[in-house]
Length: 364
Ligand SMILES: Cc1cc2nc3c(=O)[nH]c(=O)nc-3n(C[C@H](O)[C@H](O)[C@H](O)COP(=O)(O)O)c2cc1C
Ligand code: SF4
Ligand code: SF4
Image (cartoon, rainbow, N blue to C red; front, side, top):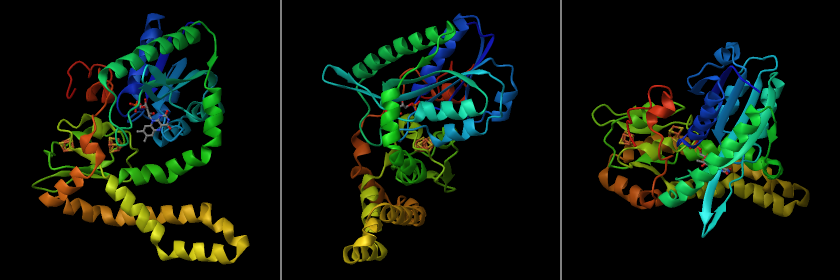
């Protein structure tokens, strides 16, 4: 199968999905195609549809066992086309326990995006999940360099196999077990998309290492950070954040932290609010109302948690300028002690201007 023009679009927090799409683009280039590699933002979906492309490839991280909202929004906004070939790749959280590499689970990520593309008229030729080093550094420390390098070698090989198959005209549809798991966990994915990512957005703060350089705000793929304060500007995280980890991974002085204590505090506060107690009281006394302690309770607590966070965050941002409060919040979060991770070869400029901008590293 020979493609004349191939477009490679990616959404990537810490460079994993960018790296995979670059390998894919290199393979297509070697096969004789003219290639473009672009981040989905600020790409205009209408332009993607209008181009002469005969292969569209998209790559993204897995978030909450499904595709990130930014990628879903992008593919949903693509205009209809007539049979352009497409492939979809989701990177996922690879790790290593002792001598064994452990896989992540992409869940519904690839097939959800593939289904939307098919509904838009694309002929989907392949879908693949590929393990890259886990980047959820608000949750766990970054993996050590030897493990990272082992996972990258395996991912490069898997991606080469995938592209060889696609470029020779064969289809590749993997990840059926992951899809099954993703379907079983779809309520979790939905909860992540509707509530989880908003909750996580408001846990970020800058420690007093922050120099106010504004790199995090400038390179956020979702323009989710505002720099606040005239004399001493500090990043302020908005609900647009998708927890992609880029700001935390690339801050040159490791000032971005996630407030674990706040997460526990807000959840307890939401769970202890009187209406939740009222639901529990009703469910205990009137057996047919026992269902109130399931989804309705969860929805109520989630709404509370988001309202509390939304109201609390501006005040919290102000309090952080008090040195001892900032120090206390910094030292009581695990992220302060965690190693950071981003794909080792990927610079911030690669992520924003992949062609031409990547030669001069801004921050390694
Ligand atoms: C908020 C968040 C949620 C994640 N959820 C999953 C998941 O459900 N399954 C999985 O295998 N990996 C998950 N990961 C790991 C990433 O998908 C994985 O490391 C990916 O390669 C990151 O790619 P990127 O650097 O292009 O953003 C998650 C990471 C983050 C930050
Ligand atoms: S990149 Fe780091 S130092 Fe610069 S403004 Fe953001 S948090 Fe502060
Ligand atoms: S604020 Fe940070 S974690 Fe959130 S989307 Fe922007 S770069 Fe990613």
